[in-house]
Image (cartoon, rainbow, N blue to C red):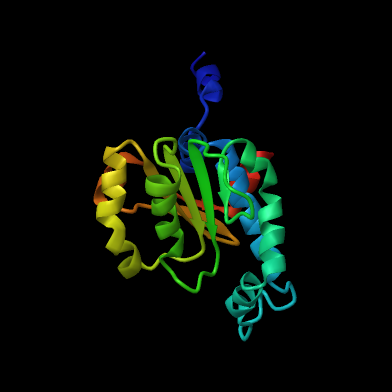
Length: 199
């Protein structure tokens, strides 16, 4: 009897806990958007040089990120996300949905993604915007810190800014202020964890 109970008990692994938090904390369309950005990043990396010690992987990524055709190709991957959120950059005027996604990859101006999010929430979609997700491959604390008070002020108005730092092999949400750090769960989502979840 005791042996049967032991076999029925399922071990809870840390990865299971992380996945459970991820599923509740992040909408499916955000997980999909992050995955599409990662796939695009992988395509920008030459597979022959990815494992070479001398390869300058990120200079190749930055080169393609400045290519408007490549950025358009990335934006096209996120077309289905527009059903749930406004996606920027975009060529047309956003619909004014409560959620927005700003993709800021290899920016020449490191604070641009956050500044765009603040402008969109506080000015261009004021009254309708409730949450903005910034998906970026760059997090420069000195630049981000300039906007801590803006982030908290928007939070007091019921508007949340969420910052996802993404690489080709995983991602992590970065808190934009001390108040945000106290409200949300932050974890690193590795490529391997995501593959296991899909099986």
